[in-house]
Length: 203
Image 1 (cartoon, helix red, strand yellow):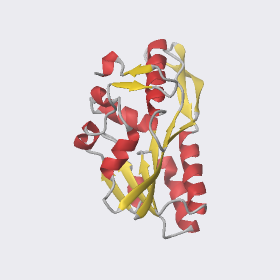
Image 2 (tube, helix red, strand yellow):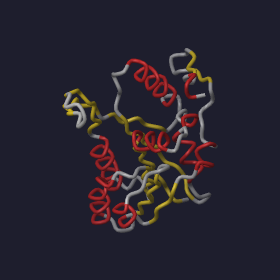
Image 3 (cartoon, helix red, strand yellow):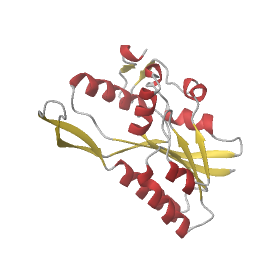
Image 4 (cartoon, helix red, strand yellow):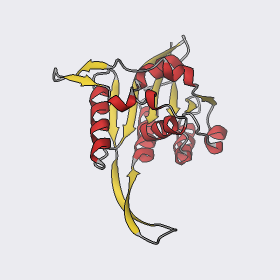
């Protein structure tokens, strides 16, 4: 069996779902999605999900917290956190200055994990779920270290990257049918034993 580790850009995937109007698919099981994307000759060693915790607005923070608690119940899925920085944005219409949160470290963390797992010979094929072209350099380094390692990139809905398409061994679009088949149960039990319920706005 060909060993696979999946590296999922949580925000890139989320905004792809949002752009495609797939709100009812926000309650996604990333590991099940990878299972539905792989070939029968491939075995999933690990799924690594990259994100950052949202603090504002409160309702978004609560929904994300609930979702992350749901992800923590999935075996062989590791959540790797980046962080947010606030940057000043000037409105081009009214010139008002306001704070805009900017997610940081996801592409760096993904690249480091992919390189580390390559050096340790933890996979034969890396599944990269993103359309972030910043990961091109990581792919180039992996190929320089071990040209036998394969990189398969899966583009979230409404997301493309010409650079990633050129560097990856294979590229695929993630179709809605695969996403609809990869949802979490509406009700779950957390590791601590309390109920987790899908946010009502996602049902």
